Length: 433
Ligand code: GDP
Ligand code: GDP
Image (cartoon, rainbow, N blue to C red; front, side, top):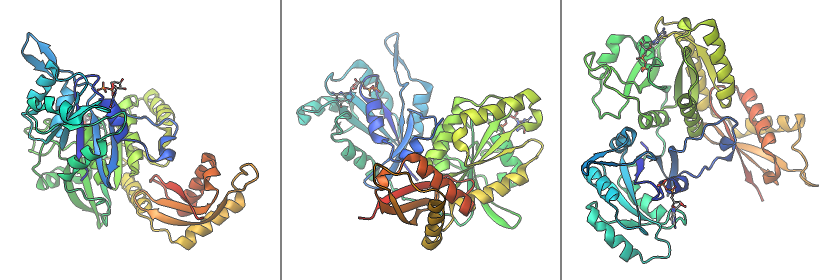
């Protein structure tokens, strides 16, 4: 699994600067999707080939009340508890402040590993500035400059050293799907509809608060794993509502799945949180099926509204299939499985180079890449560069001159030719000089 690193610290120490540096988008085509919601607080990146999630706990502001009480934003505390490691950022130019001490006090209670990052130290004597911060009682402070990128890779490299990071374990030989969505959209009801109550309990799994529940099951003689992020049945019925919605848990589940099932509530508007979860799935490249739930309870106006909002706010999910279901009545669940199967097959597709190259040639015959000045970019052949999501790598000359619109055209051709519905597809290029 990818470790999750939470960035904490009082305002203005450089959390968002560090966050931006740690989550530089590598995939321009994805970044350009119209309508894509960029969540400033959750992202992912890689250092030395090791992937991680990073959470900017922007809202983290300890409040000093009557001199002693400290209250942290609930979300921040949740992030601290759910993260695998904490980077506590302090300002090397300002020195220790009372707020830093309060935060340190809370962080000393966590069982997670904590690193103190002394930021803004470009051009300063590192030994001298960091020495001040030993006093926080959280081990050896590390000097960084988030804005100049100094010491950042080393710091994150050190953080990640403590974890066994496996690069990719999504390549299960069967669909492994995560049921995700904001609270109350009907995730647990859907999981129950899929599995039936008793069998879920039989697969009860202990875990920390963060863990989703993994359940293996068979349906029509096919093997599936469902990742239940609602996880309400963990302790049987007594504590059914104990589980809280957690973005970190959802991110981990999506990452670990090969198909995400995003549940929306037809009786509600498409919220920012829905769009954010959808964006996140797209960024990870996971196959996706959308279940618009509570359809039987939605009025005609509500049905119109959600369809309108889906085409406006979730336009970037055009690759996914949408289902209008009622988890409560068990309606539409069978069809949902057809799409899960199809999305899984598309995500895991194996495309031999000759077939891909043939599809590329046909696409070019129908429409040539536009001239760039007097140069016509030459697309020679294509090979598959990865799975889940499928990556198609085009080889040729002057490919950097090919406009995005043409790459999108090719993407659509490949989707059609190979029936890749349900998964994002990445088309990249390589120069063959
Ligand atoms: P946040 O409130 O903790 O998210 O802090 P920001 O990332 O918004 O940064 C606060 C201010 O510190 C901004 O003006 C940044 O440009 C500045 N800053 C961040 N990192 C560095 C750094 O490494 N060196 C210097 N000199 N300034 C920095
Ligand atoms: P979760 O928080 O996403 O796991 O949502 P739950 O499965 O706990 O459902 C939240 C509420 O919505 C419960 O009261 C469910 O009975 C109700 N609910 C779930 N699915 C449906 C549905 O298809 N139709 C209707 N009318 N209500 C539903």
